[in-house]
Image (cartoon, rainbow over all chains, first blue to last red; front, top):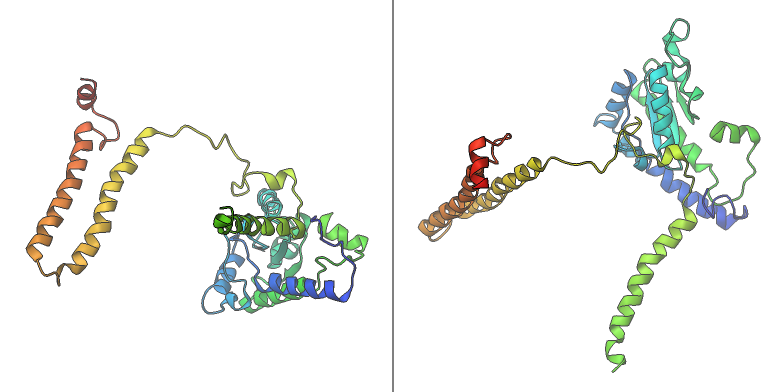
Length: 174
Length: 131
């Protein structure tokens, strides 16, 4: 990671800078233009005027993973798509976050028993930060997921040194 | 003598500092974690095929140049048409507009005669170019 990332002592001024940076990151999440299946319709509704995700600073999807912080995985990930999802996640710049949207992405959904080609949850391919269940989730649920992600970002340590548990490291970089 | 140009020196130093400071700060602050999959060209998650430096058909170039004719024409005809109503000497404006279109039309006639308007150049026009 960067030179200063997680390398300064965990004291109040450093934590203050971290809080400021996290406030900026959480208030300007750029999602990636990415839709796989029916959940993408709900996702587009959230971007559009009625629900207006831009109120939370996350309403303008970027056309390339290089510019985006968040990949919302909306819809059934099949075995062929899983490779692409992994590649797209790889090509995003850090810090990057994953929001799994819908029952299929959270764990297989209706295809969990007989779906021969469905990946039973996108967490088998990429590390997921927020799970939003539902088939499909209501737009409000996705907005809640974005707000949960904002909370999660606000708890992160940017410059401050922080002991990470082995389990957390596995979840993020494993 | 030296002090005469001290403003230039200050300007130069300020310029260098203004450019270098964000670069240094960015190198200190930004997360840096390159690996092969991340550094790959972005091709919508597909493996990139071939080289980006390919040979491009020259006929697209001439087609783009022909487009410039219409582009310039539209770009100047719109304001011309907008102010035409209240222009004092409308006759002169009309004549100038017609001359402008004629000059651009002459360019179009030229490429037409050279055979660049057709995608596959006709044998007759190619022979004329060779002559």
